[in-house]
Image (tube, rainbow, N blue to C red; front, side):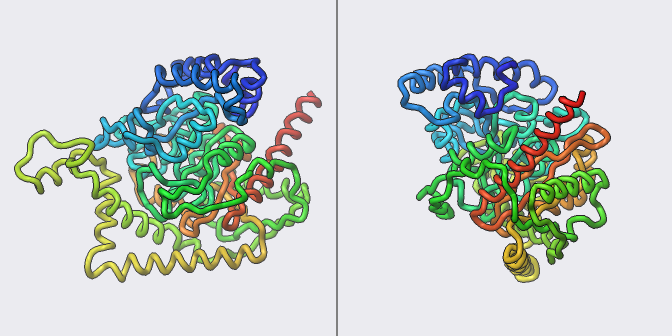
Length: 488
């Protein structure tokens, strides 16, 4: 088996047992990047020199037993809205094309403390605003399963890089499904943790009350190990939560007996692709066979989640992106007359169409005369959605549904109809509005050979339930594949 075919934990074990060196692992990843990047464009920055230099330092720490963790020496990729000291962080925008942060995000620091080797920064929708990774100023990323289709977004570069085996795992950010939806489209596993579990320090903000960093990997075990590594209380982040139950790998055992799983009827109505519905319900049936109690129920307010999300997210974005004005850092227009003209021209030239659209929408809903009518109403809806989930979790341990209503659309289809693109987030945005954890797990392929993923949603701080159920499903799939091979 080639090195790049290994999972993150398998590679970590082989490095620890000295079967593979860190340098060999890094070289295998760089060769895979060189081979695949011209077609898929998963990365915006590849730090080849830094990765090779880092591999030698990490190898030394592994040899002297300073580093003993399961991910020591394993190469990883970072979404380009997470600050990385000495490596460009552009948020896939022209306005930050030459920005090199003087510090790293806390999640990145936690990975490096555990011995990770950062290969580079992955492509994304500009400032995480999009669902296809087509709004990037630096060009689109293509789906490794079919290059004519999108990888999803906004963490499309991270998910595509994992799917193309250009890294062993990656970090993404999830504001309204930006880890879970592209994970579904690319056939990988992605976790959005409970809000506050992973520090947002060093994450370039889109919607501060919704953003959360999470892992993308090839399987549930790798995802659990990465999440365990990056989760920490951070006094630099006022929303960071101190938790004593971040040993997520302890939930990696096959057992869902007696687990109560609810399937919202609201998620299986008009707009859901037939093949997606069939695959998701088949996953539910398999969990039932493993001993889970699965039943349908009504989760109210689903149709209000998308409008409430976009009002709140765009309002916060209009405030957060005000800092990019050409004064302190980033792009500045070449010719201008006076300070205000410089602001306007810099932002007009530096931001893409989708970012401008969301800034304008956010500024509108926060403006005098419309604040009560739109923004406050959206906040009240957010509270009602959280209340609906609270009621559901009084009866169920987990909620199961699709991660997206369709498989990955063809390149160019979504941007022509922004409203349709926004409605594609119908199954994911409510999780962010309520601050809940969610996981996307592959559950099949459609007739075009594109991956289908299902989503599990847990109550606050119940990631272990998600991981246990997802791991059980994954083991069941592996057993089925083994059985088919033996029959042949």
